Length: 119
Image (cartoon, rainbow, N blue to C red; front, side, top):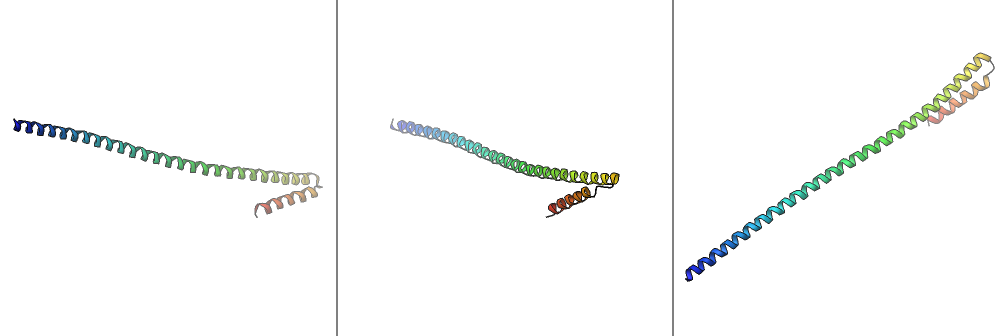
C-alpha cells in the first residue's frame, strides 16, 4: 500500500501543479491583454492630443489672418474716403473754379495718409 499512497500523492501533486500552471497561464494572458489595452488607449490619447493641438494652431492662424484682413479693410475704407474727398474737391473746382482751398486740403490729407502708411 505504500507504493499506491506515494503514487496517489505524486498524482495529486502533479494535478495541483498542472492546475497552478493553468491558472498562472490564464493570469498572464489577462495581464498581457490589459497591457495591450492600456498601450492602445495611450496611443489613441496621444493621437487625439496631437489632433487637438494641430487644430488649435490652425484656429490661431486663422484668427491672425482675420485680424489682418480687418486691418486691410479699415485701411481700404480710409483710402476710399480720401479718394472721394479729392474727387469731390476736383469736381467742385471744375464746376465753380473757386475751390483751391479744398483742393489744397485734400492734397494735404492724401500726403499725410501716404506718409503715415509708408513709415
